[in-house]
Length: 272
Image 1 (cartoon, rainbow, N blue to C red):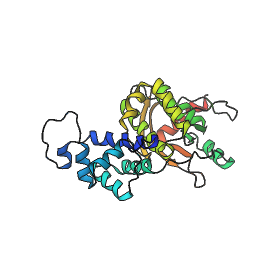
Image 2: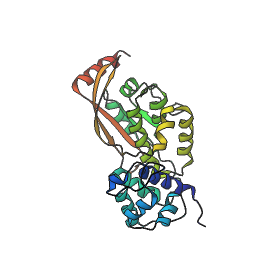
Image 3: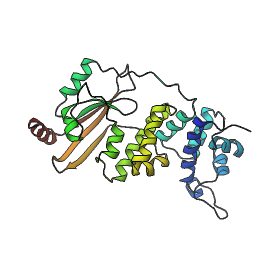
Image 4: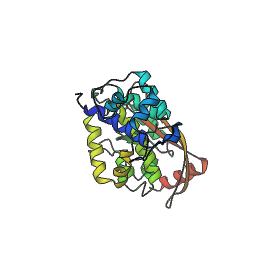
């Protein structure tokens, strides 16, 4: 009997969540008989993927099987995965990565860049989404404390969004943010720090508790953002994400404000 492997359980849970969202009609199969649950049956996914049912079942149950890239691509096609979900599937199927040493050094040039971007909000995240540095505009717009190099505890961006009141009860925005975090989590899904954060959010955030089990995945991309704050007014940004070539664990998050938004933020920040 094949043994269940904890790191493989995530892969199995992800496959099950994608299978359950499809109907036979979605994939061009005829539906026969009454179904006890929604979604495709395992044997139907196996048929579409050109693999054995027992082998696919072992994969979904977190057993110690090692699918090839071709098999994973066949499964991805059968489950109609997006490009982000396909990459996520391949990451979860790889052997668990060893915990990497922290490399969170922010050189003087990066620090000066973040400060020089005022009044455009800018900050840097590490691989756990901890905020390492941010400018005054980011503190003002995102309700962060003033940055200090002597802060004893880092603010976690995901925790701040979900429990700090920024998202409120906006389920759609929370779903996008959590899907983006899951995409990053796949790279080091056996890292204790990641799992501690997830356990904490499952206890402290109702939205996270509801949305994390959905296994949605979405890569963080550059995009236009528009929002309204009663103290600031309407804000428009082009959100750009940069990663230093020598430290891909860091994300430089820049919110380039429109002309009107930048002028308003500059005026408001100058009064602080």
